[in-house]
Length: 398
Image (cartoon, rainbow, N blue to C red):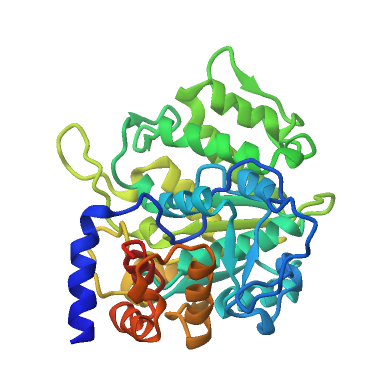
């Protein structure tokens, strides 16, 4: 009966939904890192950790939240994080990520990798809403704090559907360019890696038009600016940037490590909803962006790592219950990514659920009186099955 009453109350409160949602990893408002201006020390709590450096976190921090500096959020994830989490950050006035075992596992591998060898490929996989994007963001934040160059594709599925403008490629007539998506990605790439753009020099000459070109030995930033200012050539510029980084990473004289992070890597070998003028479907390989990103997924380069997730959300023409690598990648994708290191992302453990529940209570996000009782907490566990995304949706109504 208690479960029935809470379920009925949840349905009643649907019309009073707040604008704040809490899933994934989000964008922080630009503000001073220290929010609390009082001189009193912040009390210790079981759901927070004072260790904000991902490189120093360990298994004893699992289930605890650490605060990401506002400057890191604005630079590392300028426009690439879930809107629900962006709304949470604005309401909670802080950006926090829970320390979980999958991210710690990959970070430990990254700490002990021999980067003179071909890049290792990591794949986060798990049930829908289990926190794969969160784990990817945590790992990418580690790379960023270690001074890596971060090439982040926040949602590969967006490149194979809902394309606003599709143009025939000026370089290869059999492929198609996506100038608007390319320009947006180049802007974010420039924000994230500003410190590298003047140091890395191009290794070859690129001709864009009869009058415009980028000579060999020019800063990579000049190449990026070409794509931002000349939208028509932006897709080819993205391919040139990926090529330069792939060829220079790990080579003598290069002073950077490359982290290639792709959320929803299965989109590269899935199906596209983009249509040609004759109404036939565009094959992902015909898209210049996907074609170049597939090259980057090959581990024929050194000096970095390829960190990816499998995503059911946005995955076209696949079963909603599919989540294993062989199911979402398909035979072609699996063969192209093999060998890789699979990292399972499960639902919350008891400790992780408790940390999330206490965090919501601390932020005064749970307002319903029943949700603050032990009986109410048990009903939330039953309704959400400790799935991070489902827990977020249920608590957003409380």
